Image: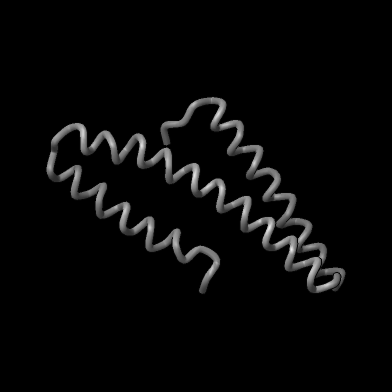
Amino acid sequence: MHISDDERRRLLARLKRAEGQVAAIRRMIENESHCVSTLTQIAAARGALGKVGEAVLQQHVETCVAEAFRTGDADARAEQAESLVEVFRRYGGMGRS
């Protein structure tokens, strides 16, 4: 992944917050906390992970995909286009099973 040091720090900070939120969810379930409070914490964790996913996707498009289209190599373009379709398929369904 090609990201700046600042962006890497931001993503890692967001992931640390998400880790804390997930740990809090586990404790809430262990302690049989109020359902709405637990669901609120789950939504916050999903939101944090979603923001990380958006940032990684943006970097992928701006670097890997853009480079494939700049090179003019048809195979590389096709591979990146296919990878984007797969990413959108998976990313669009995050949190659903």
